[in-house]
Image 1: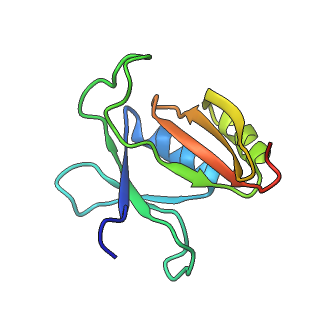
Image 2: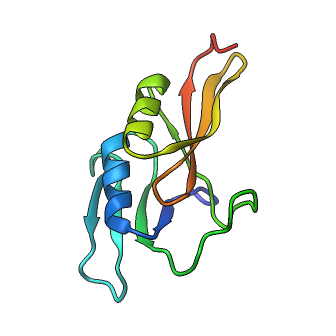
Length: 133
C-alpha cells in the first residue's frame, strides 16, 4: 500500500537506556543490529507473523543535540494504541518518562496524551473509547 508509514526511528543519547524504556513500557523486542556500518537497534512492535496492523522501527544514536524545550521537534511523533491508558501511563512514569500533555478526551472516540521518554523524545498514547468525554 503506497503512502503509509512503514517504519519509524527513534534517536537517543543513550540507545541502551531508550531500549530498556520502550521494552519496559510497551513490551517491544529491541535488538542491536550487528550488520550495519553504524550503531542501530531493530524494534519489533509485534510478533513476526502477527496479523495486527502496525509498523516496526529502529533506534539509533542521536547525531546532534535535540531542540530545546518549547522549540518544537525535528522528528515525527508516533502514537501507540493501548488497551489501558492509565496502566501504560504508570509504566511510562516508572520507567523515567514525563508527562508532556496530560490525558484528555477525544470526545466519543478515545483518550489521548503525550509523554517525553528518557531521551527527550515526545510520543503519544491513545486508548480507543467511545465513552470518552
